[in-house]
Length: 272
Image 1 (tube, rainbow, N blue to C red):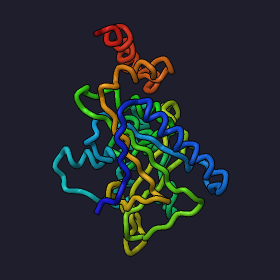
Image 2: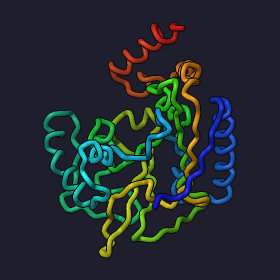
Image 3: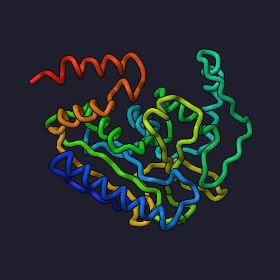
Image 4: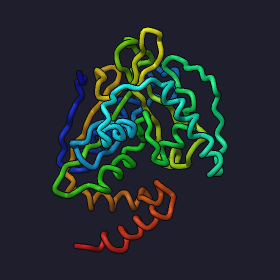
C-alpha cells in the first residue's frame, strides 16, 4: 500500500522558490548537526509535466505500455540483460564498459554495473533507476518545458534521511539513493543527476526491484513532498531558466536540444 507523502499546492513559481529555499536551509542545518556517512545524501528534485504522473521508472513504464503485468523483478535478471546488451554497445559505440560475469551485490549500495546502467538510462533503455537532480531549477525545466498551460505540473523533493542512520525491513520495499560519482554519460553530470531504486529482499536476501510508490514515506526517512503549480507559469519560468542557461541544449548537449532551444528563443518566446 503506497505510503504517505506531503502535497503542497502553490499559486506561482516564486512561492515554490520560497519553499525550496526554506527546505534547503533546514537540510543544511541538519547536515551540520549529524554529518552523513555518504556526502551525497542531500535534497533531490524531479519534475513532471503533469501532476497526475506517478513516480515510475522507465522500466515500469516499459512494462505498462506493453500491458505486461510485471511489478517486481530480481536484480540478477536485469543484470543478465545488461550482459546481453553490452557486446552491442561496445561494438557499435565508442563506449568500452566492462561488467563482471559473476557480480556480487552489496546490501543497500550500488547495484553491479551502476555506471553502465546510468549510461543506458540516459539513452532511453528501460531502467529500474529513477532519475533525480540536485537542482530544483533543472527539475523545474523538465516540469514546465512540455507542460500544457491548462494543466498543473508537479515538482517532487526527496530526502533519503534526515539523520545519519536509516532503518527498514528486508521484505518490504525501501528506497536506496545512489550518488553522483560515476564515469558515465555526460548528461549525468550536466543535469546534476542522482538516482534512486526501490527494492526489497527475498528469503535468500536477494534484491528484488519494485515500485517506488509502494514505499512507506515518512518524516525522518524517505521524505517526499509533491509541489503542485499551475502550468500557466510556464512562459515566465522558462524565460527565467533560459537566462540561467537552463534549457534543452544545456541539459542534453545534442543538436535536438539545440533546435529545441533555438525554436523557443526565436519563435515561442516572442509569440503572444
